[in-house]
Image 1 (cartoon, rainbow, N blue to C red):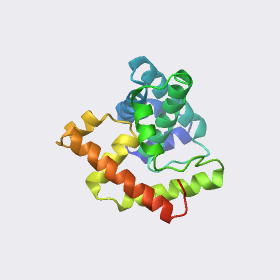
Image 2: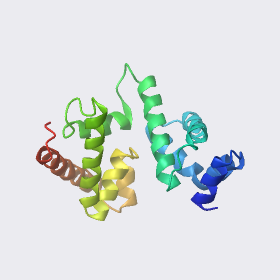
Image 3: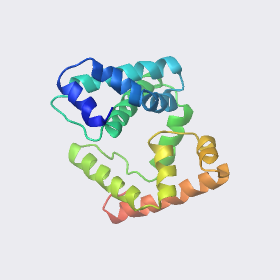
Image 4: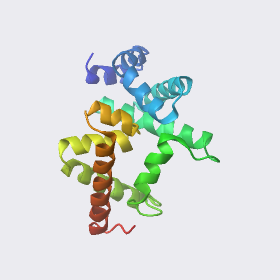
Length: 184
């Protein structure tokens, strides 16, 4: 079923919308949640919460395309669950990925909604300007929170190569953000 048809089912308040979403994007949402939480049960809860959030936000929203909308919701819910569970202890891939990015993202970034939107737009422009493979590796690491070993395997690279590419990309990001007026 096409995304437009699935969204139409949500707009009609048909419960078939959830079944069709599960059929087409369930695995995708589970992957995102599992990469952050590293627990099948928790990932499953996030997927169900994702469907509930989509049910509650469509209408009035009409997400097109549907996949990134689901990914964004799954990721945010998983990060919220991770932060709640790990508020006292710092460990895991999420912490590693966030620590890596903290060297280039300004302290207090996104403190207000205007700055958050500006930073998000700037990051999107930076990522779109990267070569395709670098773009994919960067997004896999910092959006999907994939481990370096998994990225290396999927891109047929050595882990050290992925690590070096991410380091160089973060340095470029830091320079780009500085040029755009975001001081680190």
